[in-house]
Image (cartoon, rainbow over all chains, first blue to last red; front, side, top):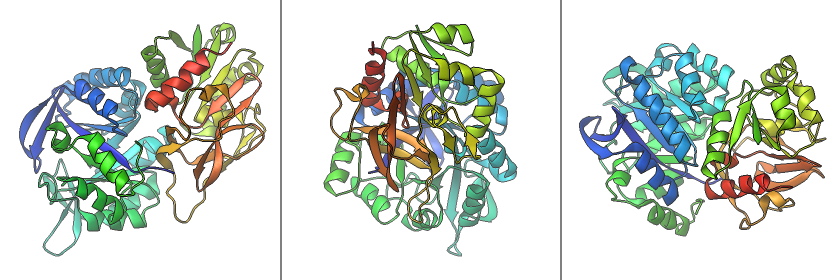
Length: 252
Length: 194
C-alpha cells in the first residue's frame, strides 16, 4: 500500500540550514548535508531544500549543495527557491535533484509549469503555494516568500496549476507556519479532495497528533515540517512508530 | 565496467551516485562501443516515452539496446521503454518485454503514484536478501501490466508489475537508486549477477 510521507524541510541560506518563525527571525540550524543524512537514516521519506536567498550570485552555492546531497543520501529530494526559468530546472535535475518546486515565477507565468512538465515530466514539478486565510474566510495565494498578497484564491490557482502539469502541490499555510498549533486541515483537505495529484501539507506541526490529524482529516499525502525536526522536538522514528500504531499507512 | 546509458531523460546522475555509494565504478555514456563492451548496462530515466524513444532512435541506441547480451537493468522509464508499446504518446517501444504499458485510471487514487510502496511475490535473484513486502520509492503515471515476465508485484489501483525479467534483461518500475537500503541491496544483487 502506498504510504503517507514524512518530509523534513531544510531552509537554506548561503549553504546553511536556517529556520525562522512566520517567515521571519531567521536562526542557524546546521549543515544541510549532515542533517539530510541524519534524516534519511532516521526514516524520512523525502527531503525538501528551499533556498531562501536564491539570488543569482548564490546559485552556484546551491548547485554545489545539490551535488553533495545527491552524492550522499539515498532517498528522493526536492529543491526550490527562486526558480524562474527552464534552464534553472535543467541544471538542478542534472546535478541530482529529483524534483524542483516552483512558486512565484509560476504564478506570474503559468506557462512555465506547462513548459517544465512537458520537458521534464509532471513527476518532478512541485508547485509550492504559500497561502493565508483572510478575514473573509477565503484562502489566498501569497508570493515572494509570503510578502506579497494576490487576489487569487488558493483552490483556483491549484486547479489551474494541475491542469497545466504540476505533479504535486506543496501547500504552506502562513497562518499556521511556526505556530506549532497544527496544520491547516481545512484548506489541505479541500485541495487534496479536489485535486488529482498529491498534496504535501506544510506549516504548523507541533505534536505527533498534528501529523495524524493532517493525514486522517486533511487527507494529505505527505506532511512537511522543519523546526520540530531540526531542534529534535519530535524524532522521526518515534513519529513513524506513533503513526503506524494509530493505523496510518507508514513506511517503517 | 558498468555503463549507464546517457540520453535525454532525467535522473541518470542519481544512478551513478547510488553505485558510488556501494563502491561500484560506472560511466555515464551514449557511446555505442562503450555500452556494447560493458560488463553490465543500466538503462535509467524519467520522462516521456515518446520523446525518449525518438532520442534513442536518433542516436541508434534503440538497436544497440536490444542487441545487448550482458545483464541489463531498466529503471522506471527504462522498464517502460523495454516493453512493446506504451499508451504514453501511443509509442512503439523496444519490445524486449511483451508486456504492455498502460495509464493508471482511478476515480479515487491520485496519478502519478508518488511515494513508498511495497513489492511482493519476488521471482528474481534481484530481490535476494530483502524482507517480504519491502518498501521502494516509486513515481509514475503509467504501469506495466502483470504478465509471465513479472518478477515482483505492487498494488496501486490494481496489481501491476513492479519488476520484469526476460533472459538477460531485468527491469524495475521503482527507483532503487532512491530506495534507501532496500534499493542498495537490489543494485548490489544486479552488480553481482554472473
